[in-house]
Image (cartoon, rainbow, N blue to C red; front, side, top):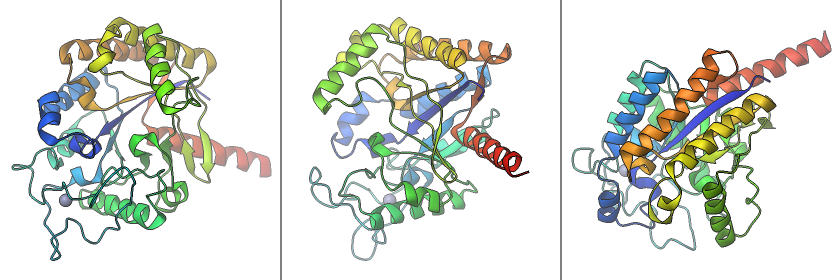
Length: 328
Ligand SMILES: [Zn+2]
């Protein structure tokens, strides 16, 4: 295959954090999440690079209303996680974007869709429910996917690519059944098999040392559903992670691009836009340097830059050609 660079962004505002971080603290740590999105869109435009924005389905909405039983979205089956008490939707304000801007994002969708570079809108679940957790049964996942498809349909968007909340995979069959053709599998990093605490420490060491990230060849997990594994997160500069120099992030990502070209594989970079909240200007400059390198490689013909959906389409088409040649 041709070497490729893929970027996927997990766009979730408060939805990925409400179960562990109070809203006021999240807002203090992320004072301008929409500004970061605008800055990123500007960078992508500057280098003419499209990416996959995996947007939480609830953010497609401008508003929502409480059901007659007093619950938010009563039609959706609820997960039952041992690590979360009460109704999963208890935090949903059942309000609108003006009053509760962290829970709705129809404006973000407008900006992404209006961009000239042709970004892909992907799916990051409807309510950031953790698909791979045993507390998320098939009924919960099915309702969640259907809610995403419906929200997307109302905006004229067809969802093809999926990013699992917390990168915990599950219910792949339901994704295939509902028309998805790609998902981001967990990064095949060397520290992946470790238990959670040593894994976190190893991940930080890996980033500190700027170790060359893995690159992958996408794998057809189910007919028509491709796993395009992540390679690395563009690490935020909050907490202990601020001790990882910015230059190391850039060096690591540049090494990933070079490795993709050398091995004819895919370098898949990902992060959450709010990960740029801390040290925003410097983070944007560092990320811009990665985009500049990728654009140079593309313009010299060494590298394709694709969204997850485009790559899955190419892979499926290639598979069909091969089958055709084999049977001809
Ligand atoms: Zn709602």
